[in-house]
Length: 251
Image (cartoon, rainbow, N blue to C red):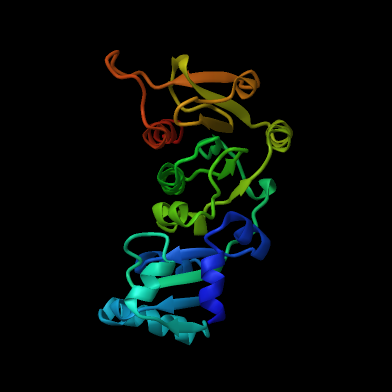
């Protein structure tokens, strides 16, 4: 089964980069993929999918779209899934190719920049939150988990089918910010309390779960901001912090 071999291969980041393909697992995620008009290259399905009306309808939608579908046992499907509950379906899709210029930053439409954020659940949640608050896009700097990691895609709940996102290096990212007059705001424990939404476009820089932002990025920030928290608390989870910041700057 060529499709099964492809799915196994796509669990590796280098294979996803080489093939320009990624994986989507679960009924809702594949539904969101189709609704967003993302190209589906094939899917493997198990009896669990066909056992429910919703699953059967999804299978019919795939077949109507001309997608190659291979049938496996649930045990075979579990073996190739990255998540514990693939819900009877793993699909191969072709992610959109986004560039920095695909992001239209504007007041109340911030760019989210991730520096070394490594937990797939955090990155997926940030993507979902970015979509909810109308962010212009997401840039993953070196050290950040691959945005096509199956666990990131799953946690994003379809957001990565819609929000512009890409990996870029520091030089290209900050050159783009300067060219488009987007002010970089660094999140920092010693920053000033986040106040009202800024008048112009900004980029929110969010750092690694443990180490925070790299110092060489902080020095380029036009402003350092913090979320006031109780003195007994050490810090906030980066995905929680992203949600609070995005709400505040898009109000």
